[in-house]
Amino acid sequence: MGDFNQSVILEAIRRSGDGLSRIELVDATGLSAQTVTNITRRLLDDGLIEEAGRTINGPGKPRTTLRLVPRSRLSVGVHLDPAMTTVVLLDLSGTVIARSTHRTPANDPMQVIGSMAASIEELITRSGVERASIAGVGVAAPGPLDAERGTVIDPPKLHQWHRVPLRAALADAVGLPVALEKDTTAAAFAEIWTGDDPPDVSLLFVYLGTGIGTALVLDGDVIRGRSRNVGEVGHVVVDPEGPVCGCGRRGCVEVVCTPQAIVEQAERAGVLVDDRVGSDAESVDERLSQLCARARQGEAAALSVLERAAEHLSVLISTLTNMLDVDRVVLGGPFWGRLSEVYLRELPALLDRQSATRAVRGLPVAGSVVGADVGAVGAGCVILADVLSPRASSLLLEGGSS
Image (cartoon, rainbow, N blue to C red; front, side, top):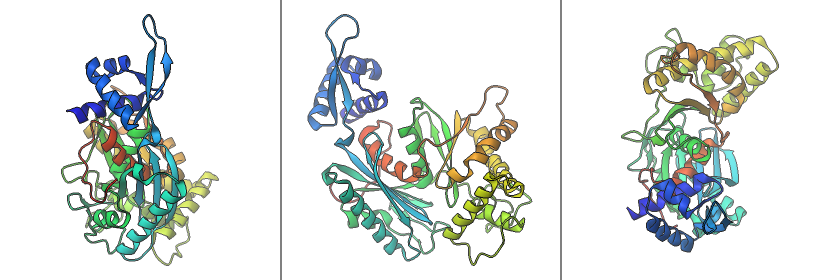
C-alpha cells in the first residue's frame, strides 16, 4: 500500500506539469496530510522530486511547490519493426533525450538483437547520462508474444522469428532489466503518458506500421488482454469482395489495409508500375511514399487509392468503436505521417455514418501526439509507468541491476 500511495503522489505531480504543494496533493489524492508529508519527504531524499519555490494562495503560510525531477529516472525504449529499429532515451516526464534509428538487419534474430544492443549502448554513451539512473529497457515488438517467457512467436513480417527469447537475450546483452510489450500496446502507453487526456480517458489506438494493429485504453488503463496480445485485427474482414487472404477468407485487414496491401492495390490499378522484385519492407516503404507524394500533388488516381484504403480502415474502426464505446480514436505509427492528410479528411465522416451512437455524441479522430516514434516512446513509457503509475500492471522484467 505504501508503494501504491507513493505512485499516486508521483503520478499527481507528473500530471500537474508545474508541480503541486503538499496541501494540493492532499486534495488531489485523497491521502492524509501525514501520509503525503511522509511520502514526499522520502521522494525528496530519493531525488525523484524537488522543491520548486513557494507560492502564496490565500491566508496562511506560503506553500512549497513540489515538482518532478525528470532526469532522476530514465528509460530506454526500442521499437522493433521489420523495416526499421528505433531506439530512444526518455526522462521521467516522457521527453525524448536522444534517439537513433537504423534498418532492421534482414538476418537471423540473434544478429538483430545484437544490433539492437549496440544501438542502446551507443545511445547511452552519446547522451552522457548516468547508467545507474536507467530503470530499464522497454521493447515494442510485433505480436504475437509469449509475455510470460518473453518470446516473440512467428510475427507475420519477421521471418525466422519462431519463439525467439528476445527479453532474456537483450537483458543479457545490455545488463539492464527488459520489458517486452506488443508494439500496438506500447503505442497506447505513449499516448496516455505524453498527452493531456483526463485520467479516466477511453480510446482506441489504431497502429499503422508494417502491419495494422489496435490497442485499447479504458478508464485510463491500457488493456493488455489475458495473454497480453490484445489488438490482433489482421484477419477482421473489411471488404468481402477483396483479395484472398492467407487465412482463406477474402478482404481481411492484412490484405486490404496494410502498407503492402495499399501498394499492391495501386499496382493492380496501374497507378504504380508493377516492376518490384519483391515485397520486402524497404521496397514497400519506398512505394507507399511515392504514392502518397503523388496524392498530395493532386493526382486523382493516387488519391483514389488512398481514399479507398481509408474507407476500408473505417470498417475496422467502426466495428471496434461501436462495440467498445470509447471517447475517441487515435491513429499513429511509422506510416501515419504519410497517410494522415487523407485519412484525417476521410475518416471522420465515414465513422460518423457508421456510428451506432451518432445521435448521442460525436467520435473525435486525431493523430498521435507522439509522432512516428510512438512505438519506441511507448516502450520506454512502459518502464516509466512501473516507476510512477499506480495503475500499471506489474511488468514481467528480466535482466541485470538498474
